[in-house]
Length: 327
Length: 289
Image (cartoon, rainbow over all chains, first blue to last red):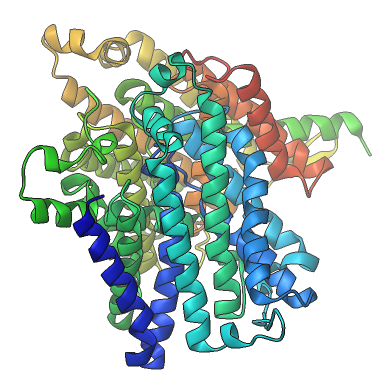
């Protein structure tokens, strides 16, 4: 990352931090949700964009976090901020077991195992009434105050800052992660797993680790959603949602961290716009998605950076090579 | 209660279920074997088959007309999609196919909702196949018996088609070495379009057969696609015999699991899949890990 792009990111963060001063309540609600989804999409990017682990069941992370946070907030007096972090941690720990199983397979089988796992959770959420509220879901999830009676995060602006803080923290964490030696191994797995293995890396261990981290951050976003909306339901675990977040990542630009956040915001904007005049927005979304995969696999962010840097062949980017020919 | 009769009817039940799953699995595995691509929209083609079947029955009043019309229409649609879109992706990574067919699933689900509505649509069992027979004093629906028979007939037909016809030969050759087949003067691209159409048509037949049992509904696609992938992963990607074994295994687990452990039935299926993957990562008859 260059100094210029760092300056741009800082500018974006400042604008987002000032947003509550200028935006009407309805726009604030939309923006908060977009940031939550942005965090969710970014967490998937660690798997899809950097490690080429195509997960079709990432809704599992969101749902785990949302239900965990919902239960913590409903049944204990743990302050909001700790409940959210604990729920993310819980999702990450569950993911270690899931990843252990799913990484037995690779490629398509991996994708299908993640989908099967998410559908299993969806089925469980329907049956386990005492914990998940079955088809009614959990309702009336409070934004518990604290610690020390602090109520700042319970208000609309305060909650927005909590979400923004989580997103920025997660972004900084992910960016240092992908730039670290750990991230280099992940990219090695993406480009050529056999070669990485031959270099002496335990690739399966790395894959389990990245799935766990991705689920922890995805769980954090789900955990933020529960007190944001005040309810959870089984839709959060449904396969359609897993697909939507995958669309956000690809349309935004996989393997860029910032792209998926933009993809999530784009998704929110377009679905809001489309749903105001048609309720078959999924039709348009499917079409937009196909067009992006066909003609712009580098995503919105990839297109933007290419336009910015001038369209040199190198600037097409190594980051989306996994979507194109591997020879 | 007559235990032997119960056992026989449950086995027949599982066989009829296996027939449905086989229609799905064999199409997916044929497509994978020849094109190395994964068709996530397979469940959506199955669902489309059920809806087209519903309309064909409503229009003509004949279930048999539906059985002919639906696979042709669904197969033609599949082949058109291959020609128009998938063909552009052959020099790209596998994940591109998975994503494009996922997008297609979204579009088809929504288009079907617009065309046929949200409500589940009942397709009546054809008159000649309605009613029940008694097997050792246990009642059993004739339609399921018919389904089990149809499964066996189609399995033999596909096997003979692959072994004895020229197109079958080309399909097997292309799955082994596409470049060589191309060099020998066959347009491999046409073979691919044909196989994609055939695979989707088979899913369409499955949809018509399933419609009288489960009604045509919008929930069909995701359930079907997951079952199908479980079958193909168990049997081994690209293996015809594997899809047969996988369908039988999953059907027996589903039928007996639902009877003995109703709450765990779904988990049992995944448990079988995991066991197979731990022992043989490429599936029972698969070559690739």
